[in-house]
Amino acid sequence: MGALTDKYCIVGVGETPHMRPSNRTTLSMACEAVKKAMADAGLEPRDIDGMTSYQAGDSTTSNHIATSLGMRLNYSVDILGGGSSTEALIGNTIGLLEAGYCKTMLIFRSMNGRSGRRMGGQAPSGPVPPTRAAEDNQFMMPWGWTSPAQRFGMSAMRYLRDTGTTTRSLAEIAVAHRYHASLNPKAVMRHPITIEDHQNSRWVVKPLRLLDCCLETDVSACLIVTSRERAYDLRQPPVFIMGGTGRTMAPNAAWNYSRPEIHYVAGNYGRKRLFGMAGISQKDVNLISCYDAFTFTTLIQLEAYGFCGKGEAGEFVKGGRLQIDHELPSNLSGGHLSEGYTHGVSMVIENVRQLRHRADDACPGWAEGKHSYDRQAGCRQVKDARIAACLGWGTETMSSSAILRGIAA
Amino acid sequence: MPGPIDYSKITITPDFDTVEWWMATKEHKYLVRQCKDCGHKWFPPFPACNKCNAMDLGWFETAGTGVLHSYIVVTQPILGAFVEAVPYVVGLIELDDCHEADGSLVRVGGVMLDDEEDVAIGLPVKVEFEQTNEANIVVPRWKISGTAENTWKFNE
Ligand SMILES: [Zn+2]
Image (cartoon, rainbow over all chains, first blue to last red):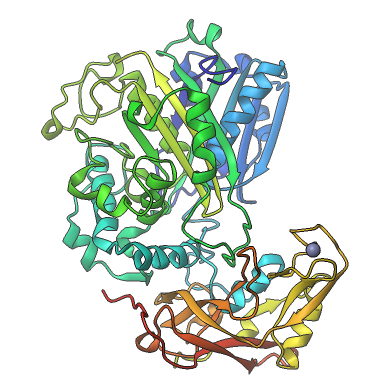
């Protein structure tokens, strides 16, 4: 077990609706998300004395939120980063709280991911005008190989070849996450889909189809972390942080994939540290959020983090295994594929709600933890949810994670 | 063959670590970085040897041949430069002459001159240099150069 296992808790979560477009600033959205997270936790602005965020040059920063909401921070740092940053910042936060830099800390992401800067580099109006190919991009952009789908498609293609997996396994993930979105009033895409719907959707970049790709949305989302002692006095059942990893790398991380196996991804190098720190095994995990920028990123991380054997993920996901009421429910909010895109925060938020036993679904008593477990009636609470694994993805060579424990089930 | 690529819509900006590489493409040479101390080869041209950390570096002129290790087929253009080019194949090429005894190897990306139908993982490829519509920039592209056994093609 880690020295700090269970010592710090996630006590507040909040987010704006997923919008396309928001017609708002990232500052305005972030203030809304922060207010909601404080209200969720039962905290006031004066109680928050640390703030951190991640962004891609596309967001407001901590000092502006603090100024807007009348906070005086003892610690504030905003970093560059995308997917896999949430869990990495949870790690930073634990260390800062332990060291006494601050007492209660907020992590946020705010992005106009659809109407502003899009991760694929495509402007809302169509393909982008002259673009500067500098640094790594000197050896990507002139090859027409830039967007996340184009980059990760390369390892996905080789994985299909090496393992005999077909895209019907990718479809299983799209179907599972969409089913969960159908039970989530906040989700953008709520109509259930079938494997055939996936197979019939148009190509974006082979081997990935439209329904392999996440949404792009305008949104802000945030988490509040504090000590166990403070957490007991707050409004919600605490969710304990058992362990984690932060932007763990695979060796030889350049985009040109000069590693023996291009689909032996970073999670393989983080999983012993993650489960060792948490003091549990994969079998103890009741639900996961497995970063779904694409169906393939979820698929490959199942084996990287040891939920199935190497090369077995394609078989593992068959038969609805990732769906609620099955063995390993994944991305209960619908994830980035179907709820909306937050660069990972929303996946941690959903796990927190599940572990509180307070998934915000169609059950009238959800806020008090009263659920019917009737999926036809729109309940998406996982029964007896106690331990959740958050498996963040940045690239094939970078991954962060966290294991969370609840006491409400 | 894919449609034309409008390189005027990409501003390639060589820097301290890469300028010699881009100059060599104008002489139709495909270089990778090589450590003068230990002989290790790598790409892209990062400024230190990741085996011995030496920073006294040279270049190794590859034969410009390799094997197609993976590929993607881009059907939806993201960059303005590639609007006319779709559908095009980006290949990941494992260079023939950069294998080292400890298993280290070099792979490079590039736009294939071949269409999707003619491309399969495992096939041999060879570099061809394309003069772009920017006088100063020559870009390497790749072409299937033969046949092989046990090739694999994405077929859905
Ligand atoms: Zn060396």
